[in-house]
Length: 106
Image (cartoon, one colour):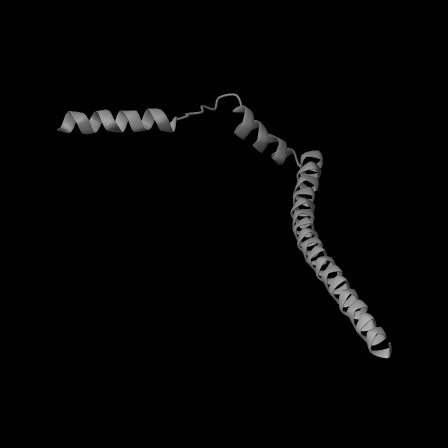
């Protein structure tokens, strides 16, 4: 009777250890995945914070620096002052012109 009790107790202990071990392994795997997710989110947050700082600086410049407004007007909207000329060359047309010149030389 005492031997049977020891066998039953040992069986329960082994089952308990297997279940506990599998739960521990599952929790450890989940923890590892969450740490990786946190690292990715922190990287995204840092990138967004640096973008935010750049945008805040741009807003400040636009509010306090007339040259910043002029730069944007010239680059984005191609505005010019009276008496100025703007020459724009499109890359695609330039390549076509070069190709035609090469063909003529042949």
